[in-house]
Length: 112
Length: 114
Image 1 (cartoon, rainbow over the protein chains, first blue to last red):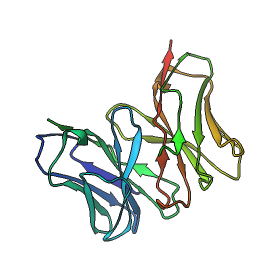
Image 2: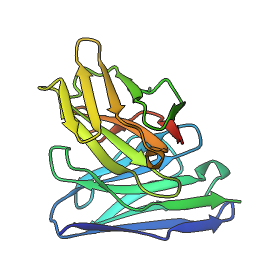
Image 3: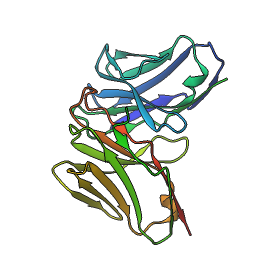
């Protein structure tokens, strides 16, 4: 069966520090991968999506970047965190075509 | 640009009554719609979906209605139970510029009181 792992679950980082959140999927190949963020009062916002290794599309200009070094690995990064980067970050995967999304358990990031 | 809108941030319903959560969308390319339920500090969990070729889909206590001409969908929960208290997100997907990424509304916080 397919599973998705996302870590860490919570993170407190100072302003200006780097960030690396990792997401891996098991039990499927060539999934579509996504990073979403839920910020206070803003719902779930798509940040990045990837349809294959090395293929990253950014939806919102921001302080973050994403990479897909392996088929089932998706990494969200920042070189220097801002206070506004605080939020709940969710990784998700789907089969090609869009239906059947599965979300990870999320990472609560607090930038202080 | 919010393409999926949930205009009610919160809703309170008595146990046993019907909960109706509404959602509007603007992009006519959306052809697949989903509802997710989310508890604090957890990822969203899939609840029910509907394809644009249908106007109704039912799964137990949950029914989703789609009105394509009005670009409107709604989720009905009957009867509502205290365990249904959560944030409900409406989401839409289709062959848009973002691939088939889900576009979410801001969510409606449902509180079911005993």
